[in-house]
Length: 408
Image (cartoon, rainbow, N blue to C red; front, side, top):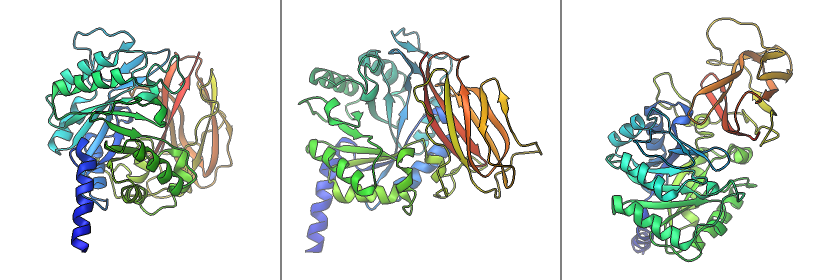
């Protein structure tokens, strides 16, 4: 009887995960974090081996970021293409990562945040550039940023669009899967389902039970399709940090409750808190910090000032930077001012930086020893153009990141 039940469960799982070729697990990531290629592969491999069902190492890899006013920023050259609302750099920031994923035989979905840009054109420019990589499993659209310049939270995908986008993705490789991602079902196509993978990236839950219940409703909304989930956001950290091995505890709870689950992805915002980056670029074992490092800035969006709050834990091995410096107090530079400092005992080396969407450091707000406790820095964005930025706090091997939105 037990063998019979196991066979039934495996059959249900195989049907549910048809859109991904079996259960996949890993992270959502991008070049923006400047973690080494080996780091992402190590983390994804580790996560894939950790769940109650066998999983294949995978990643959601972001290749365009939404900026402001409908414009998005690619992380690769145009290859001669000219797309409205898309800015291209002269450097390919993805190639070395995809080569590493190829070596590891991972499955990778290339994701866009389209803004007002043509999704169809972005599919062409992305897949024509990267389809030679064996790791590519499909293409994803974060619908939260679809025409976000005119519709808060993005607009609904029409049935015609979903069908056309899926056909275009599969025209590059019939095995490719299109995923559509949002935190609410109301932005998904009304009736068209095809073989689309539907991804829920909701956050701000009261606990594991409320997360499972909401994700379960998502799975029930697409009963004939595979679904996937993206979690690990800082706003949920107060409760997931209390779990032993949070990605595993959450993932197994979802697998036990949602039979059409086909993908489990931990977000890049907190990945290095659980898997600190070792000196050799490889992720160390799964860990949890004692308290949140970096809180969301306020206000956000902002113009031009915003408060960035962060917590410095008690000093310990690996927290100090090279050399000896005086503690940072008062005005740090033209972009930042410390408005609170609890003292200078038990100092820890702190670096607080701001990066643009291409991963370029544009400001260093703090760089020196600070006392344990909570600190606040006022960031002045008057010298920067409107758009999205990332604030990165580093304490030795501990790293936390938040997304900032400057609207001028």
